[in-house]
Length: 191
Length: 191
DNA sequence: CCTACCGATCGGTAGG
DNA sequence: CCTACCGATCGGTAGG
Image 1 (tube, helix red, strand yellow):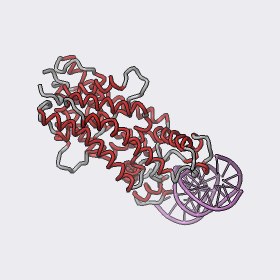
Image 2 (cartoon, rainbow over the protein chains, first blue to last red; image 1 turned 120 degrees about the horizontal axis):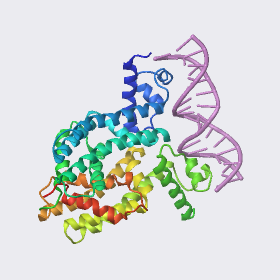
Image 3 (tube, helix red, strand yellow; image 1 turned 135 degrees about the horizontal axis):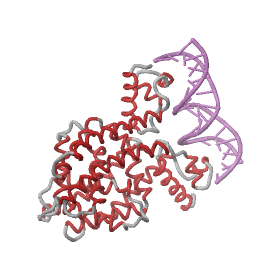
């Protein structure tokens, strides 16, 4: 059995290449080179290039869900849960921007079966954020908003992050999430 | 000189293929097949596969800018401009979902020089939406929000549309834009 | 717009 | 994990 660190090095190289060049523009020779071996050697550790993509996508989905699920299921006001869930989301993006990018941008390169599996993981995560909105509307903390569109607005804000947010900039993940959450909660218009 | 309808057929085939399979997963044989010819014949009408991508991206950017610029520069309250600009944006997405998808998803496949050109077109468009927010804040119609993040929230909402909006569904472009705009203007929280 | 084709490169394998 | 390689396919061209 190969040592786990080898597989990890391959995944690390793959996630950065897939994020920066795209899956189809990345060759197995690129991935091998990035993990210090030749392309043939890769196949002692992986089954196929697409397996690598699916591993990255599924693992990223797991990161997001694991970070946000406890907040949604735990105690607290809906507005506060939204703030904390968004902060958790931005933290996951910041911790591995490449993985987030591959998760959100490259799943189309998966085979139909694996695309469906990835979509299920994404749906599960998106439902969590929807639950926060439902909680707020039911409790009266939120206005009786269109819940589908409220969920879409929150999802748009967090799913678009990978396009512009760069960790190490002037704003920490929590500050970014707070600014977006306040805008979503309070709106633009003067009262 | 080739007849314009041939070139249009090639662009039509390319935009759908690029949107649905991605640029790198689309072959020139796919594009040729989709426009009723063989791959070699394509090159009587185009210079390269990448030229086709850039034409699609630049043309989509132009559609968005042309639809929104008159609203931003025209008269009206900022909240109303935001509603109308978002409706115009959704209409452009609805009119050619594939073009919008390629514009937002596939520009990474361009060469560095053309990526820069595409980014400039995108920036110009995004600045237009930012102008509406500035107008609202200056006039006092909007709260003194963080303008950068307010712009990012609006951009996230409209730029994420291509991922979930499907023309021909139950909601017309204007209805979709109105729901999103009201949420952005009024926020989730009860007053 | 087709026929015929090119060199390059692709993902992956066999055998050590 | 390397050497050596495979068949398939890629974007693009020449000559009609």
